Picture 1 (cartoon, rainbow, N blue to C red):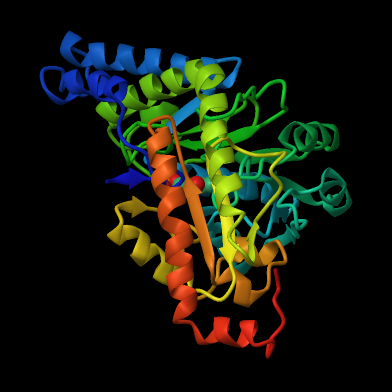
Picture 2 (spheres, rainbow, N blue to C red):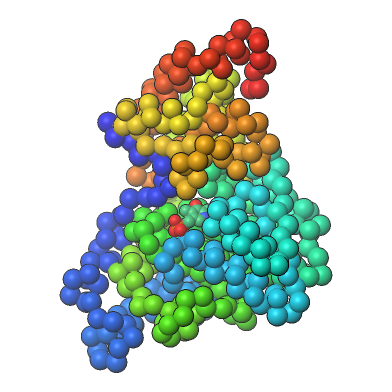
Length: 396
Ligand SMILES: *Cc1c(COP(=O)(O)O)cnc(C)c1O
């Protein structure tokens, strides 16, 4: 049996997305920047895709949507752009959180080296940032607040609308990394007072290598790739026409289906939680009341998350511990540590992220395999032996 339970890392390409892109890979391969009809058709279709994305996000105008190569690029452009605009006004302070994606954290670190000041807010143990903490951190010289919409490892959803209202009142640009939220949760950039928003196609069934950045009109946006006048001079480079068409079609389909899909996916996730939380000395990470539908993150005491993943892989289950981007390093996830989870426990983490394409049979298989795998790893674990003999206290 093959069970894909790593939808927070990437998702399969949907039939809708594939069909939307095929013409642009076969007969319609003209360059949208050309003047003849063959290219103009591509340019017109790009503008339709831009309108579709704008509508899905509640944006006032399609001109506020810029296509990029990925979520990371959108995040980089948003922060660098905010910083440059802020510096011109003598505002060189940025606020974000300790549990952002590395596309945000590493960009902030680079900006610090360039002389900007960064405040990283701590996250509460429920995995939710507090609006009061943001309010307290805002200063006269703050140019940007960037708080992710939903966390990619624990799935918790942040009070984006409240933070947006606060930033609007204070005159600070508010950016949100909505890569885990777009297509999965309702988003309305106007009602939520979002100035900039990043999304990525491959997290909602479009292919990898295409993303978008929403930037509200009157919020300055700088270009960081020099070249032609594509994307109204804000992002040079011949457009990934097929990818953009797929992104727009997949986003529309996912958003249209939220009312049906979210309850079904949530029900599957709840069954996972119910079953897996019966494993002794385990814990669920992050609040379940502010949550994306499909992601669940657990810690099992006395085992290594990586060893668990290998056992699951043998049984056909694709899952993750921490994020795909952070894997390969031996440090426990910065997200789990930011929630105050002790190192020893954070090492034994498992992220299961299910989606619209999963079935109840997939959930059954996971519920059958994971408890057995945890038990067999514990049977070989010297740390578990110490815990069981009372040499070390159990942490959960
Ligand atoms: C996946 C992800 C990204 C990066 O998107 P790419 O398109 O893979 O560059 C950024 N932020 C979050 C929260 C993500 O989950």
